Image (cartoon, rainbow, N blue to C red; front, top):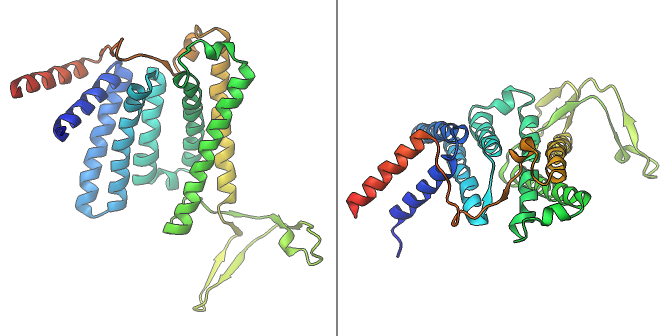
Length: 297
């Protein structure tokens, strides 16, 4: 039976090795990890278990990119890896715990756009991961590669919207954010039942009558999530499109476009070519771990 402590030590070493390949990824990772641990402990003490769960989720997600690299034999470029770290921290720590999504109106839009970019890169990487031929991507039609990349990205985006809807309906959340609108059209209002959309314009207010006699007056018509869902899909599509622009440059130059190469994941055999740790602090941490292991042995 494996010692769970040694397994945790191996996982931690792998994290340091993968993130420690560059200062650009290691120091942000270290800072974000420390902040997440502090918030986890603080929220547990305060009894805010929802926020504690979000901090814990951030810590788990920080492990995903190195785990993905090792298990899938993929190399996530440092700039792309940095973007992933910022996305995780911006979503769970800043967006949820510090409530940036409620305080900054464009925060959710920024996150979904970033999601589209990140998952488009991940979707493209599957082409290499599931095929041993690393040149296949260059021989395939560029249209086919882009279509596949966009399709997988939007598939995952749809799954996320399913998750938001389920959380709202089953757990009482409000992940599909509502908004006030001043117009809509609906066949429900068609008295002829001929499926004619009846427009309702210039809505100034609506009144919600509750069973207990109370009333809620709103300055407009409350849309229940559909605008938010479609906006999320549109901006995710936009983010994926931006990645595909870099992808076309990458494919046309057979991987020699330097800017595109900083964003496109590629296949890499980490067993044959172990990661080269360049961050000074990462080197010290690995050296300290090795000394500790040697003493215990």
